[in-house]
Length: 78
Image 1 (cartoon, one colour):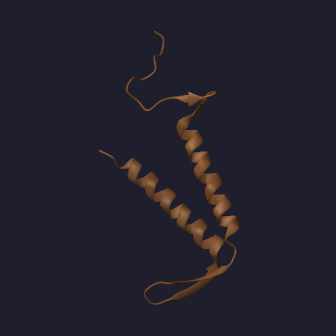
Image 2 (image 1 turned 90 degrees about the horizontal axis):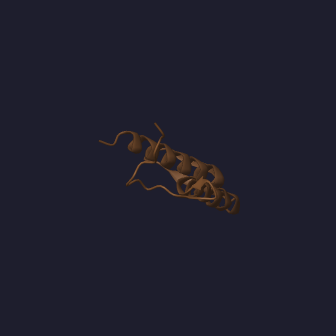
Image 3 (image 1 turned 180 degrees about the vertical axis):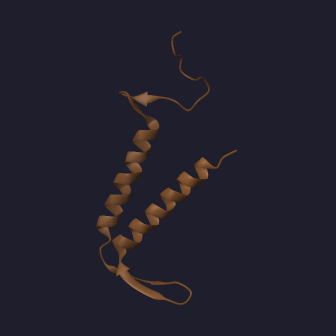
């Protein structure tokens, strides 16, 4: 029996590359561009400690935390 594509899904592609892959690549490219454009230092205040770090490290950490949160939430859908 031949496999048939799922109907009703958010499928589609451009030249064999899915829309999702294109979207993820675009977000990564924009994030890297934004990180490279911001190379100054930043002071980060938590409740008690204060840290000083280059902005690119802060942005990279924020992007990674957001990506992990999105992955975790997606995995916990009902």
